[in-house]
Image (cartoon, rainbow, N blue to C red; front, side, top):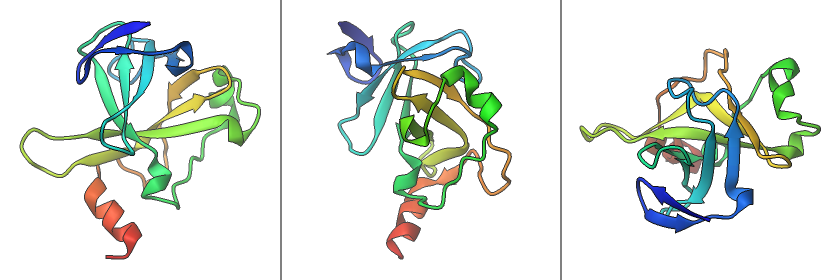
Length: 147
């Protein structure tokens, strides 16, 4: 199917790229269907709304820069996703690129969790105080490389 996107114009997607967030993202609860689209800059992925071409989020796998990242989420909160095994889950963190030239940040407090077997997804809120909404992405990658 062809969809209109904010960043890439019109693109073709297949059904397996579509995820459904029953409750939407925080602040965007009215939008429920999104497509995962590889960004031209790897390892980033676009989460493009199918309901509004103007709504898209850039995201990345948090384990690429934080191997110590932990999702301590009560199983009851994950029950709507019908997760049977941890291997069924994909995790992404939303990226913010400020217009003022400030640091690019990753929201490790509010990850997107996707059951890749049924494409149901949700944005979780982690209560661990070590995870924040604005982790400096460049600093995190540099720390992982040991610089």
